[in-house]
Image (tube, rainbow, N blue to C red; front, side, top):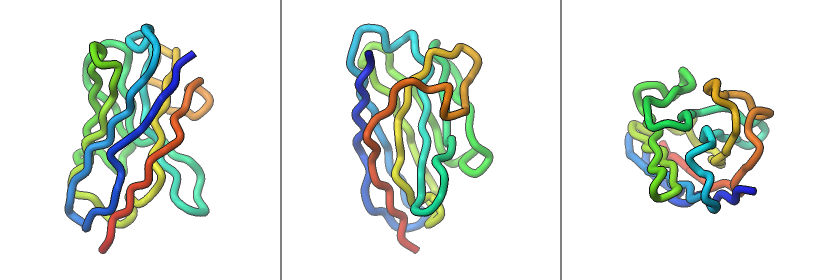
Length: 124
């Protein structure tokens, strides 16, 4: 069982930056691929970024590539999402997720555990 708690959301102007954090419980954090998803009002939850179990490069949705960076610190059981050059269309609730797949998961069904979400609002 893994419990995930996101933090770092807030209100920011377009062009600004935020860093989201997701703290995980349990001693098996390093065995999970981690992902960030987001859901805007009236829209489906969508993949934003993921990072595999070992420390390495993340993988991204095209809409955030070059602006967002995912990273993880297995010693701290934490995954981060650095968001730069934010746009109003990035406004959403952002969710952290953990999955057992070793194949760079992007689909919602590949992630077994989810946090409660943190609101990110980007004003124009």
